[in-house]
Image (tube, rainbow, N blue to C red; front, side, top):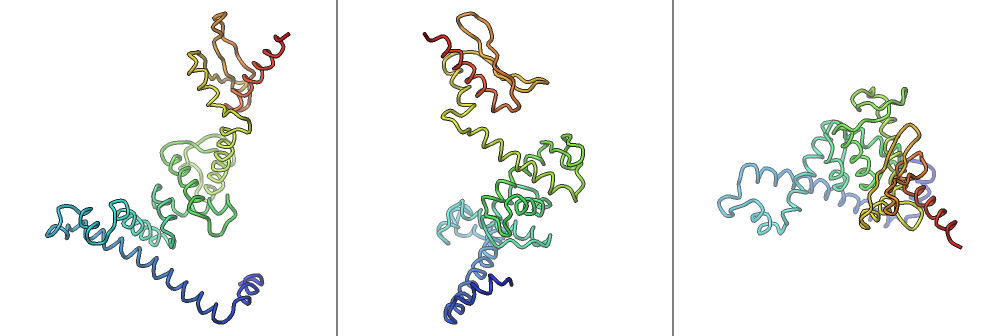
Length: 255
């Protein structure tokens, strides 16, 4: 326990400390109860022990426990993720974190949690933090390549040494976050929304790429010629560069 933690604890009265301990125990009991409930529901469903009174598991759960179909399966999933994690030496006490981890293979749980802590700097990251990293790891597992830490070449995640995967995936997550910020933009029109506006007006064009970078081309209906914009480093910057060039040309044409 750090000095800061001790100082915070000393601010509590004896009654408050006792109350805190009592509430913490209630939380732990609730978590264990949630996992236990999920296990029991899984067995009730798997062995169809509801069949003497109800035609379906969902109808049984709603009438007997007041649980919706979605909630029934959330509890079952919580129990399954918690069990898979426990087999790998990982304790999952937060149902929302378990739900976030549920999108990846159990063998990737530790990777997701390690990357989340590395990227966020939080010892106990939120479920939203875990979800963002889990989504990235899932896309990597589905075939998207990741930059090798040594060669900087895109390779499958399986080709990254296990001891370097946290580093590689952390970089991919951080790059994805920056890409989302670039997509949203800082101006009044999002880049891809700007391109979609051309389509809605019936214009034709294309986002091109080559050794010089990315650029947007738009067909000029008056001349029938493609009007290319400047080459940029990212695909998100190409529509912005075309817009800036177009607006600059328009201002020059004005008297």
